[in-house]
Image (tube, rainbow, N blue to C red):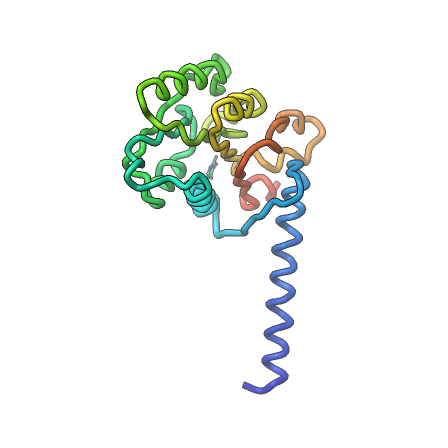
Length: 197
Ligand SMILES: *Cc1c(COP(=O)(O)O)cnc(C)c1O
């Protein structure tokens, strides 16, 4: 390969990395994440979810011998990519709990906390909550700030699936729905959904 071609390729990939890094910083700022965040651009929401679950699993140093005792909390309206991702990261044996929803189809923080307490009492390992900001079926937004309080009290990983609703954080009318998202441990947003609007 001629030197000038090599130089061009280097230049191109440097620019692409810069675009990726700037986009990640922009998204992190949009949701109010503190400094020290890290991110990754992937081919879609499902792969991003899988990545977040792998990071959560490794950060919490889960041992394979304990996978069958790990509990993941979601709602009836959680996107199926969470379940698929759990399988892909080796957590097929983990327990997936469906937390009750209220009349507006939002996960209830009180129901979540009750279930975590019960699971802890019976020797299980409550591990992660998957809250959704804009469920695909109904558009309901789980109360992330209240759920973050529960996660803090019981030391669970808070994952926010904002694949569908995330970019409504750009609108003045809807940005209050995102209060507490900045307290989450991981988030997925999907440019090929809301950002197309
Ligand atoms: C679409 C969607 C996903 C998955 O995103 P893909 O890019 O289709 O893989 C995950 N969560 C929610 C809430 C979604 O609406």
